[in-house]
Length: 360
Image 1 (tube, rainbow, N blue to C red):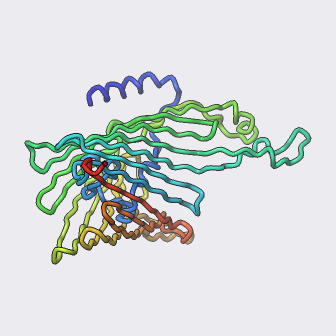
Image 2: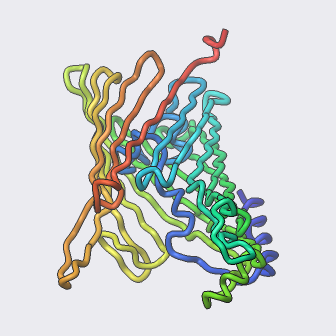
Image 3: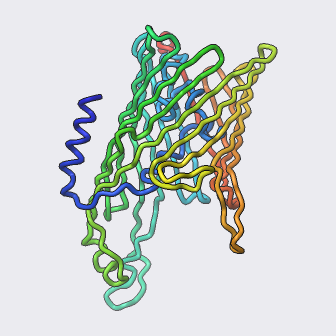
């Protein structure tokens, strides 16, 4: 950990040569969408209760709760009527009785964006064959490690090392990295967790091919972009969950999370000059740990109306899950922004766990 922090400091110092350094609000926000339909259905309030491969994203400390030697998961969802696509692939395994490893890959992209810079030919006529297409894509690769602390009963610790790549066609690209740290304490049917994302700040070094857009930017009076460093500031997520059992076959798991961001005032339920607070809650009802129904609520915001008045909104989510001999299929219906029916998104994910003795 010390070596990683030293490397980050050296990297930040050397990359001053890239130009401007900034810490914009909502930096790397694609990493806040979430993974797995279960977490999405519960409005992301799962940092204390996740116990599968997706813990590599939500809280790496929870990887120690894996019940199989190996677990794999994948997810796909589309946003804004299919304009944007979001994909996730994860794998986790135990290395010994106390240690676990995981890797997660995330891609969020808008593909087939038309490039109309050359729409007109040399004679000034429109030629649609001259239109080219490009993608604006964000990638993240998360390497996770978790360990139980034998001398401290109920304590689990974990960490992530993240590599981030972002590109906008041939116009701009960025490489970055960051660290997450998570912890969990379990006592009887209660679980308490904390997740510190981007704990050292996540750095994205942007490089721009300014010559590709210089003419267009000058004609439209826009500032030509320059190389820069973008910093994602830390955020803290606290979670508490409890599971209830009814007549052996039925269960109910409830969790409440509180997220603190430090990148300026956000449109959250409570906002201050130093940080913003965003509460969220989720409920999972289970039957024999094979069939699940899930509810979640979050994204509490204040909406200003055209007449000057204001109202409050929230984002409700819903989901279902079924486990068939180690294969779990999950579905979530999420309301992105609670603004219009077209912004609802259907999320599907698959998860499968197996043991080494069954590999033959």
